[in-house]
Image 1 (cartoon, rainbow, N blue to C red):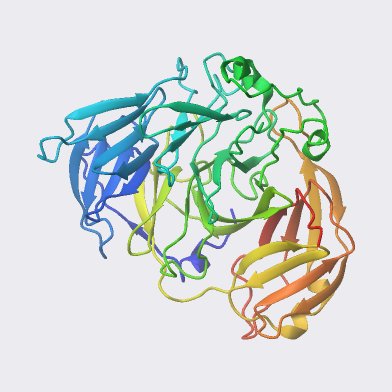
Image 2 (image 1 turned 60 degrees about the horizontal axis):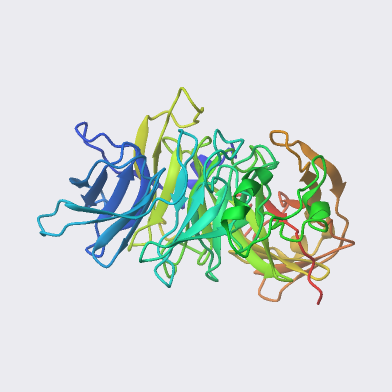
Length: 469
C-alpha cells in the first residue's frame, strides 16, 4: 500500500514464529506471562502458552493451557489467572492443581446480550484498579437488538459490570494511551466515515445512536439527543453535548481499512524512537500503524503514521515482548472479509535492529500551527522553506450511510516554518486550522541533515480542538 516494505525491513525486519501443523492456531489475543512465555488466545477458543517465541531465531514450544471458549480476542494475566473475553462473557481461567492445564473457569460477568456472530467483544488489560474494559459490537454491525450492544462496559475484579459509554458500532482492540486514558478502535461504516481511535469517556456518546435503547438500564445516565444525519461531527458536537469525537481518524485505505488490536509501546527504547506511542494493526491490509494522542481543551485528539506493511495475514492483535519486540498475529476468513496477506494464519515478530529510520516522529498542535518532531535532525534550509510542507484537509459526512467520501477539502497555507536549533523539530505556522478536519501532511520534499529522505512522508492529524494558548 505504502510501497515501502523493502525500506522498512532495513530497520524493522519481520521474523516468523513457526506454528506446528498439529496446532489449530487462529491467533486473536496475546499476553506475556510472568515467566516470559507468550500466551495466545485463538478464534476457536483455545489458549496456548508458547516458550521460545522471543528467541532469535524462534524455536517455539507450544503448550495447550485451556479450551472451550468462543473466539478469544483478548487476554489479560493477573494474580495467577488468565482473564479472557469472548462474545458472551468475561471469564477468569486458572490452574488450581498446578499441573499446567486450566481446571477452573469462573464467569466474572455475562451481563450483556449475545445472539449472533457480529456481536464481537474486545477487552483491555487490567486497569490500575483491576478492571477489564469491554467494547461490545452491534447486532449485525448495524443495530442493537441485545442488551448493551454498542456500549463499552467496565468489569470489576469481583464481577460487577458498569456501563461506561454508548455509541460504538464495531469496535476492536481496547487499551490505554501513555496517560492512562482508555480507548477503543472503531471500524468504518454507518455513522463512521473512516476507522478511528475513540476515547471511552464515562457518560459519553461515541457516535452511533443504535445503542440508545439501553439508556433506561443505566441509572443516572440520560439519553442524549439524537444526532442529525448528513451533518459533520464538529457541528453535531454543538447539539449533542455527550458526543465524543474520534481522537484519531485513519483515512480509509490510505491508513488502514479494518483496524484491529493495539498496544502502547513502553519498552524503554527497545523498539526504537517511538516510546509511549500506540501501535495498531489492520486486518484487511495486513499492516501496522502508529498513533499519538494529546488532550486539548479536555478532548483527546492526535495523529496517525505509517509504520510497517508486508505482514503475512490479517492482523487481529499485537503485543510487546519483554525484549521490546512487537508480536503481531491473526488469520484470514476468506469468505467473510478480504485480506491482503495470503497466509491463512500467522504469528510474526517485528524486531528493531538498532538503526534509527528518518521518520516523522510525532505531530503536536499549537495555537497557531503544528510542531513536527523528527527522529533525526532535518536539513535546516529545506525545513525552513514553507514550500516543503503540503498540508491539505478534509472531513467526512456524519450520517447513517455506510462510510463516507472525503469532503470539504481545503489546502492549508503555511505562513512560516521555524526549525529548532537541534534540527529535531519544526514549528509550522498556519494561516488557519479547519475545525473537525483531518490535516493531511505530505513531507515528500523533506531531507535529513545527512541528506536522507523520509522513510514515510505522510501523517494525518485530527483537529477536534484548537489550543487556547
